[in-house]
Structures are given as C-alpha cells and as structure tokens.
Image (cartoon, rainbow, N blue to C red; front, side, top):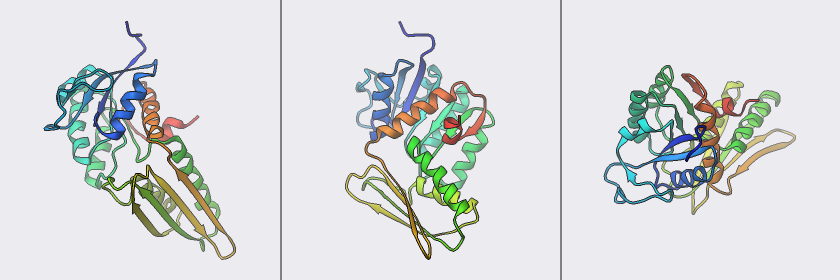
Length: 243
C-alpha cells in the first residue's frame, strides 16, 4: 500500500528522453508515485506499457487522478495541457522551452488560479550559474564585452536555448548588454552553456556542462515536491531552491 504522503505524479511526454528519465527516477523515489504516463495523440506507442508499468495514454482527463503534472514537451502541447490542469486545479511544473511571449503570458495568467513552476532549466547547477551571472553582471565594469555560447544535441528544435535566453535576461536586468549568443546543434550534447565576460585586462568564463539529463529530471521532481505545498502563483527554480 502506498504511503499517504506520496505525491501522485502525471508525466507528459512520457516516451520522450526527459519524460522517460523523470518516470524512472520518480519510480524509485519513496515520496513519489507515477500514476499517469501521458503522450501526444497519434503516437505509435499509445496503449503500450511504460517503464513504470503504466499504460501510455493521450487521455488528459486522467490528470484529475494526479496531484501534479510535470511537462517537458512542445510549446503547443504545454498550452493544451495548461487547459487540463486549470480544469482540474492541479499544480503544473513546466520545463518546456521554445514558448513564445503569448504562450508565456497564458501560463503566467493561469498561475493566478493554480501553482506553477516555470523554468527554462530545472538543473540545480544551472540555477547556481544564473546567480553567478547576475553577480558578475552587477559587479564588473560596463566596458566588459559579454558573449554566450550554448551547445545542444541535433534534435533540439529551439535556438538559442531557453537557458541562454534566461541568461540574457539576467544580464540585461543589471543594465548590461550581450554582444552575441552563439548556438551549436551537434551530436548528442546534453547541454553546455558558457558566459564570457571579456574585459580590457582580463577574461572571466562561467561554464556549465550537463553530463546527463538526470540533472533536469531530478530538478523537476524536487520542484514538484515543493510545488504541491504551495498556493496559486508563478514560481521559478530560484523560488524552489531558496533557503
């Protein structure tokens, strides 16, 4: 029998690389129970059994049986599932990138009714990188030239990455400007981000390299555990990790 304290997770994109890792890690987490493996309509593997022993389904009405939905899919699917979590009043963890400003606004508006964690990168390490970028942008003289280099696998559709865009946003908040953002799509790179502060007398590089997708999957599970205890609001991983 499952513990009453276990969090019932629904995972969207269950057959994708991220969704599969979230399901695997959550299935071995004593605080979690995966109750829904959700995939897009028309997926050739609908009806098959997932690694957690769940039938793969496109039935979004089953979200009502979960405590929370974790989403790493496409922008279009994320907005479609936003309607379902609103209908069933479920918290929503969103790690999807490539959303446009209209879609982001819909998510932010929905957060007045349900709790949402929305982050371009769920990695704890990357969120530490965000803090270091903010500190460097604040303290360094404004004559430093700032460039960003990001690299991902060939299957990643959006460029620059959501993480790179967030880094640009952080830098601009400190009244600095980014000269260039270079994106590389090559091989099976999980995710590399380098921020270069090039001054007249020195050069500072901040670099994060993901060794495995598990850092994002684990971060999403941490976010889910945190979010189920919260009321409506628009939260980030900074909120999740704040001490």
